[in-house]
Amino acid sequence: MAFKIKKTLLYIFLIALAVTCLLPFLLMIVNATRSGREIMTSFTLIPGHSLKENWEAVFGYFNLFLGFWNSLKVAVPATVLMAYFSALTAYALAVYKFKGKNIIFYTIVVFMMIPGQLGLIGFYNLVVKLGLLDTYVPLIIPAIASTGTVFFLRQYILSVLPMSLLEAARIDGAKELHIFHRIVFPIMAPGVATMAIGGFIGNWNSYLLPLILIHKPEKLTLPVMVSSLRSSQDIATNQGAIYLALAISIVPIMIVFCFCSKYIISSISTGSVKE
Image (tube, rainbow, N blue to C red; front, side):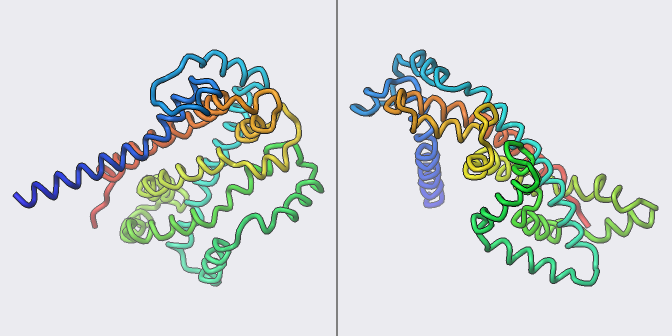
């Protein structure tokens, strides 16, 4: 009886926690259908009737779908390159023995503690000298060097990868890259998917670097475009338009999260390796 009571209380707590987490998203969607005056004067979870006006206000100031496409052109390749090269680096640090291995690893740990904003001025000067302003290259290439992802995946490999599996593959004549792509990477898939979620969210929501490096209006990413709503004089008071732009901007994040979450669960249940 006591166990059932504890279980019931646990479910009630989890349901309340889920509702608390989902409430801001629901409120954002509801406010996207209301006018700015309604949002400022009342609180409700009932949708309004100003969706069309908010839509026209947003697209009257900029092309939201163009910003959507620009952000995808940055977030997708940056996430893919980060996941692949971080996995490759983590595999080398976890499996191979070579001089300077510990120094490299400790250097990665140290760089994890240094805020990226400290090198912003130097990075901007480098981008200017290379002639890469108003391009997506400086937004994509640096994302490959993700120290946090390398650190996490190295620890993940050490916990799930049996070295006997690699030795068996080498005895069978498999090349090192073949071993990584066909054996190691599928085992690492849950960890890679986990870091890919965070990487995509970070690249999609990146604001400071695109704001500094991208000047042409047609190349602005979505977060920069959405932030301009607040500074525009004509629709700055239209809170509904801002909520609508934010609601549209989180769609890719939700899609990636749902896809990777299912992939993580399926990989853990079917991709385990027993020694």
